[in-house]
Image (cartoon, rainbow, N blue to C red):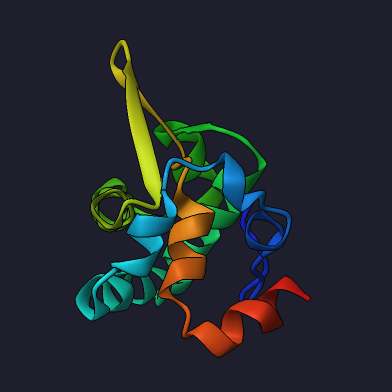
Length: 124
């Protein structure tokens, strides 16, 4: 079952407790512009946003993501690699399967990537 086009559930961003993440205040203060842009690059694709939406609900096996998103395995692998490399998603091998979940620091990373005036706006 696919999400309707243009649908993104941002609850994973809005309902976050930033104090429960692994990122420290030093990490947030020293995030380079390149790193911040990399986070937005990872978020800039509808397929990757759909993946994040599914992972915001629970950890998912790659086979479940492929079925839900109805995309080719190589395309899903590409998008998951971008999300892993950006630090937004983590994976764990379970036999021959790979499970994915949102990284513990994903919400703090997205928040830290925002320009300072927008951080308060998002929290409202």
